[in-house]
Image (cartoon, rainbow, N blue to C red; front, side, top):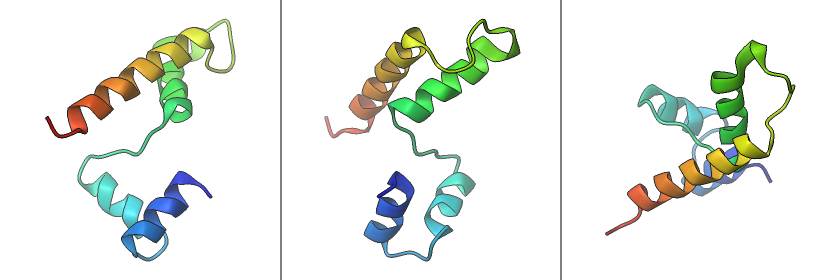
Length: 75
């Protein structure tokens, strides 16, 4: 089951409504794979010597996801 489907099922909202509401409020759902792709797209861009996220992109993505989870967890 995709992250999107899981979230919509858990929140009991119509399909597509969950992400639309989150996006309206400036939020995004991510995991290491989608964060790595975003890092690659932003920082490597069209000048990259590689087509897909590499290990450096994945390591940076993991660090960002970890930091976001730390900020989101109760202190």
